[in-house]
Image (cartoon, rainbow, N blue to C red; front, side):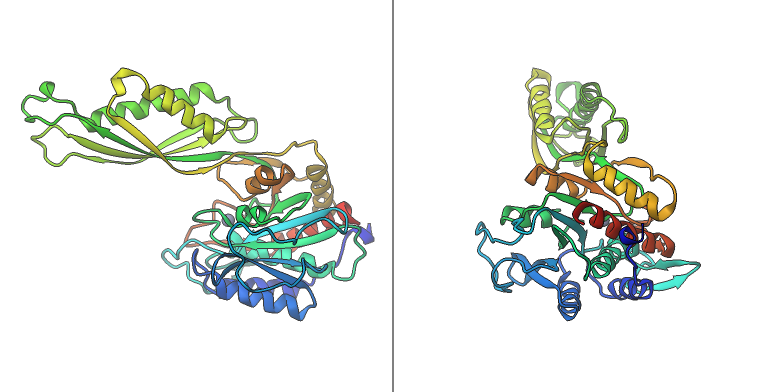
Length: 395
Ligand SMILES: [Zn+2]
């Protein structure tokens, strides 16, 4: 068992988590955190490679083994594939965490505070504590014999565009398994919902508010269409045992300009959570089929944002190995859960066709809140579990 339970430097882990929280890294302004991590890893003798998403803004890939040819900081032109990540050393396990946070709200500032066995501060559980746990796992295995390669990929813009891992994969990065760090309270998450954000526009016919029957109210038409869409969505997608049923949220509805005029125009913004095996392309098809009916003439749509669902087999090697590694650390088998939120695990699954899971310390209920925190015992356990899982898969 000793060989499969590497030692974690807990005081380093806590110190790093605290330092990461204190470097502000709201989406779009993550570079100081990336620079500081790269410096840290280079000092430990790790290899680093940057994958720019635009000049001066880089995802960071870290490994014990050399990555590609130069580790160049030079921006790669879009579409040029780099050699990093090809599995020359055997199989590759990628640990992934995101560098960015949502903007501060209320008291949640980039100031770390430790009390009652927890680390508080913006990003403490989403995603800097989990990121620090992955760094500590990498360091714990620095001198271990591994047959394959263990990587850490730190991504940008997860909270906004979610394009970090997607772009790194588009530039040629490959791995065989991915563990994505998000606050799951140490539950293994092999499945999550996808999302489709739609913007809907309706055009009606204005007339005097005293005779609304002579016009066509764009607000009402759009509102009723959204109800029809909701029924279609829940009728077509079966509830998933881990994720639950699909959902539709009407987040914004606006239109019209006066109480005594029938509204000529309206706009709605809708968030649909997609249940696998349904895809966002299926949602688009469903919207188009519904809109083809004559009563909805005058309504048009635009898909503003799309992310697919995650569906990794629960009886596959990655889930089994992570389960074993978690049980060895905590003494009991971890629960398997689903998430309704999208994560970058999907980018690995869709982009590479590999098994990917979400797993990390802290609770998603505390993420994006002003009282965000991560329990220190979960932080240390997560680091041990990441390292134990890597040893079992690659050792
Ligand atoms: Zn997150």
